[in-house]
Amino acid sequence: MTADDFKRIALSLPGAEAAQHMGSPDFRVGGRIFATLAHLNLGYGNLMLDPQHQQDFLAEAPDLFLPVKGAWGLKGATHIRLAAANEAVLTGALQAAWKLRLARNKGTPRPKPSSNHG
Image (tube, rainbow, N blue to C red; front, side, top):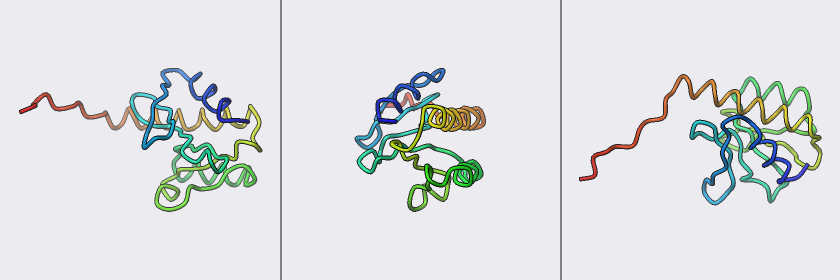
């Protein structure tokens, strides 16, 4: 799979939008990130999972998934090796990240910007 495949699948999910964070493409639902291409230079797409889902993906396909280094990885952020993935796996992984973000969005509404400008 390629970055274009990652983008196509991510944007096919209901309510998904493309944006950028720190100069890298990301994909959001409800204004919050569920996936990024921040490590595309290493051949990875990134999924914003939780630690349990991350462990499930790592156990099922350790040749495709690995934790993002550092604190983000400990919180569930997970790389997927794009060149090794197929359409079904990439779609399932992006759907999982999207569903988790939807569930988290319901529990933590995004704060509204302050209207006080002065």
